Length: 79
Image (cartoon, rainbow, N blue to C red):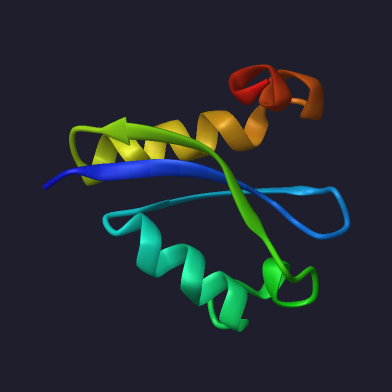
């Protein structure tokens, strides 16, 4: 199963990191307000970074690693 780690830019300029198996569906969920509590109050969101992962375990580990990065390092991934 192919998985993806992603970073969304929220309307307030903050970043949200997550993982999914269906990127398009997940971004739509976030923008409908049913994706995550964090993004619900920061709509709309836009996808700024996508990184394929071979499986769920790897995606979860990478998500955690990205979340631990400071804002500047996250921005270096997609700028």
